[in-house]
Length: 357
Length: 265
Image (cartoon, rainbow over all chains, first blue to last red; front, top):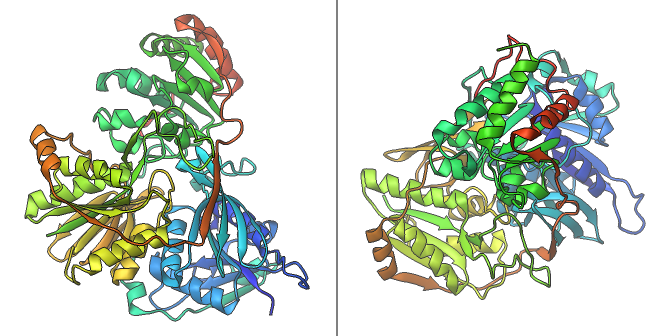
């Protein structure tokens, strides 16, 4: 029996999530079998949990595009919803059954957590936040992975009977498919049954893991909240404010600018640790990762932890009094000046151009 | 309730990361060390829990002898005791780290520390796994990514963000929780807190290093991370040029027109 690489695939409104597409790309590079005498190609099993057998039609073509040779739907008693340890147990059993060379997941909250459980169950190391991986002989892999949320790269060697990897979720994603409001696009995708997926050339199998009671004791109850409002993570324009804003009252003009450009306000860590703005507006390694068309960073010096959260922005424009601030070497454009003068003038210019007083 | 909080000593980095000549470490000669941000919030959360309902907070770290500084910083926030799992300065992987923590807790008996809180992931390595591995080693349930925590008797309720909403978990103690920055706003250390921290006794244990299967070859700074911004101008004189650039990005087409909503995220 040929060996397989296994990839946990998360769905976003029924479609293959962008982060999982990256994970599949890395898993595919590990599905090649370097051992002498092998045909060179192994199975790449995409594993999806909790769909009730209904998926968006695009799942089949997305999986085929990313080299998946098989879609495995996992279902079991008690496995409805997100049950992290049970997901890991299922992957453990599936990996054993398929003699997997690697188990890969996106470094999302779910993917990271499930692989950590899998690492703990098997006693194997987990290489987190990889951006590239290649087999380097039997049981050895050369990896490149993020440190400091991508501000640094680490070249590493992993030696293990089975490679457990997570793939950095916020590294540059191929194509523009992830931009914009995913929800609006996804709502148009009708759910289809597994046989429609098979029509796109990816065979569908089902797998029922045998779960222990302890695997089921932590499960998520999902609830939606504050339905309206643009989200920082998906906004097309983010107006950033940092220490240079000077205090809570200074954000009014940034809010006004964000409103005019159809965007939202994001802030640096110093702003939330001063209590000027709530943490949910924080952009950065320990806040929200953003990927807007424009990030206009006002009064932000550009600590690496902040830049880690906005490195996926298409354009960065910095407004800062200090021409030597670190952000000046990370932005595309800069205005050297006081944001409390520049931003009101910009707001006035936009209003004038838009025909509003 | 007696709460254990696991923290990690990490380099303090600002606008630029400088590596040592051999590419093995972040150069800290000019910057020093701090506690990883999620973990400072973990300590604050534990201190608040014990302020509300009694008990003690013990802070634990695994690191070189100098990591005592980070323990004392956390004691100054209101933690009561410190444990240093002292290393010889080598980097420990998550497997070995979790094994050492679980062994230290296990020696204190099965009832020790009904609640263990860890930062969700360390600032430097971002491994997302020490807390989960400790939980497995101790046979406890574990929740991670937590931004809100309530303790009611023997039950924890915990929330984390997910997409447009949140996920809620209910877990019986004893348990392990990984928290994220934003769960609270850590206090500044008080002067009495600092004095108490200075005098506090710290327990030192010396676990044996073990290989993890994952070996660092070298660190490097990503290519292309130091460009130079094109300066559009100085002060308000730059606004026309800035308008032109925003127009090129296609952002002014509908800007300022009625019907656009700007909503705070």
